Amino acid sequence: MENKIALIAGDGNLPVVIASRLTDMGTPPVVYSVREKVGDISKFALEVVNIVKPDIGSTIKDMKSRGVKKIIMAGLISKTLAFKPSLFDLTTQRFLASLVFRDDHSLLGALVDFLEKSGFEVMSYREIIPDL
Image (cartoon, rainbow, N blue to C red):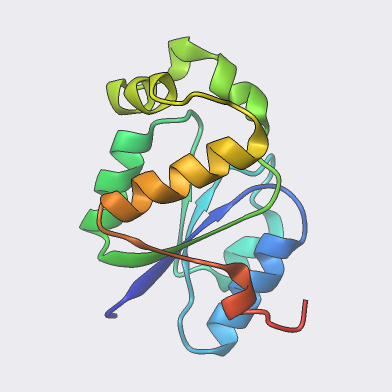
């Protein structure tokens, strides 16, 4: 499958709705789950990869090895992960050290920029669910 889409899925219903819509469109996503419980989202996933610690470098390598070209991020991900440096790989440590601010908006914007510089297209969920 060309142009695989990765869905970085936090908690809540939005990631499930996005995965369902992508599947209906013939493009089931590779789900990178940061959810407490994977649950229903697995029904709509091409594959599920559980992310147990914030390891940006390994996650990017994994996405590239699976042929992922586009990424959508949705759902609640606890920001407290950003304050547990013992869990980080070197890429994540460098990423966080480069941030001037660590509020939600700054973290998300910097992550989108980082992913785009790593060769991915970061999509808005509104491209998949314009009616929300």
